[in-house]
Image (cartoon, rainbow, N blue to C red; front, side, top):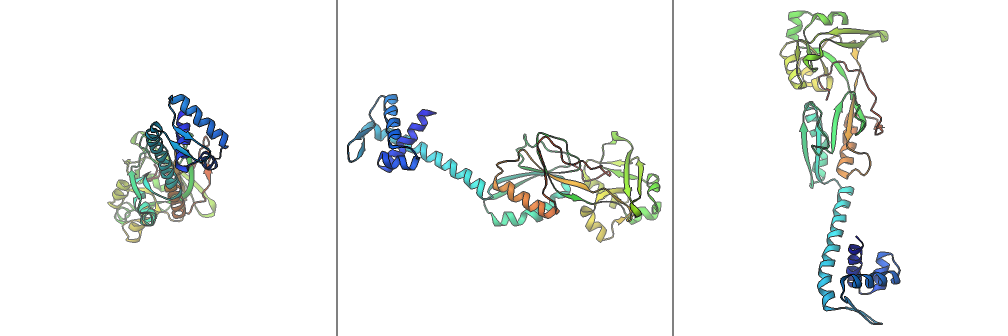
Length: 318
């Protein structure tokens, strides 16, 4: 490594035309630069510079050696410029992992960022199962619900409002639940594995009343869009993220069940492999996503999980 440093000093001396000028650029003393040049010549076994009181000139060996040293210095500067560019402006490939249901939101949120920065590209990995951030080289992952992996950094950027919904045809056939205690009598669509069995759903109602019911899912899926489509098809009730179900609710394909009762919101987390030295593409994406979710931007430190929230049987959980 010392030899590479001396090669860079040699290239700078030649570039600047004198040891004094090179010393100013390198923030060294002229005597230190001169010492490095003598050490370099001793290491290579040849004279590289002709020294006089007025000027420096290259020997034949020095001319040949300088070509490689100058190329090395130029490559190092180019590498530093590339890192500075990634640090200061969004460019390169941004790899994001997210639940399937976030596709539209990500497109709407990051579309302006892509339009404003032509050198930025997006690779979107959509899967309701968690991605391996390290193996998949993921820059940023969106997760919903509890978080307990202390090896990664989780930032809470917002929350999802959950609600129990059903298709009008299903309610016409099976009746409309009038109280939480009636929910177990209905078919339930769940995002949990079938092996999980019955699970609890806690709802808060008028006057801050709390009711907890046990539900035995009849239909399970690892894909929340599939559950939403089955709910629209009239197969049963489901607790969906209301932003995901907004269009179906507006068009009347789904309706709220027990709208005066609500389940706990689920935290939306932005997860990165590390906290510090984030490139510009990640910083800008985080800012845009935090704004889209209306989050407070609080981070959970490495080794400290983001606040856990009881899950109301979400179909969006990642």
